[in-house]
Length: 344
Image (cartoon, rainbow, N blue to C red; front, side):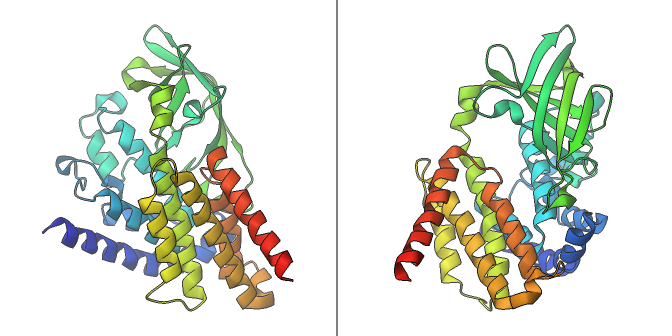
């Protein structure tokens, strides 16, 4: 099977999960604040936990980057909460697949690829500015101190990749169990949307991690230089939400506006990608607003899909945001409001 045929097969299978279990459970996920196990089991059954991993580990190395973006977009159009938690696992696999894992168990990579071992990330140490997570070596252990304010999947994942900064401004990434302890505690963020993602603030109080579970150490400058890739990946969350809203509004099949937003993301270089991300998030929010207006008063009911989409649009406006995204995003809304005022 060639790459194109494989991509189409993967995307068709993902659409089946989107139109099936993810869509069926979406309202309950929002209402209960809980993602049912069958959502994650459906992703695992498609092999999505092993995307990009070696075939010998049970992964699927033939899912290329454009196909991965299409997978994220389709899953997000089904259930944004499920997609966000799964994305944390993919972020873990990109850093951790070369490591033997807890206790150097040889089957660990296969467990990761199958979804038997699910991962999350605490990446506060690789953000620009003063580090929120610090790490220092102490004999055969690393000691992590500080906070990571946005960790999704707590209680839903088995392990975390923790990115903390050392005294030389290297980002040290380590694997630790996602379990509360005397040195690792979680505070609920009390979100008013996507509460089901179990997003918490993690507090590390001299948390000790064996040196054998250190994954890598990279200068902060190199990490920041490669940050553009995550901007594009997160843009697919906005595209998926915009697609869902478009279908609510009766846009089926050819969606020229969505295609144009996606094309801008795909064709933007490092200098333009932040503005393209801002435009994608603004587009999703505008579509969600249109869906609410179309549904009228019932959109204010907790169970209304347009109301949920509008709340999720607020999430995509701020998730993974950088200053370089925030400024064109705000400018876009201000420009729209001024144009509207002038027209009136």
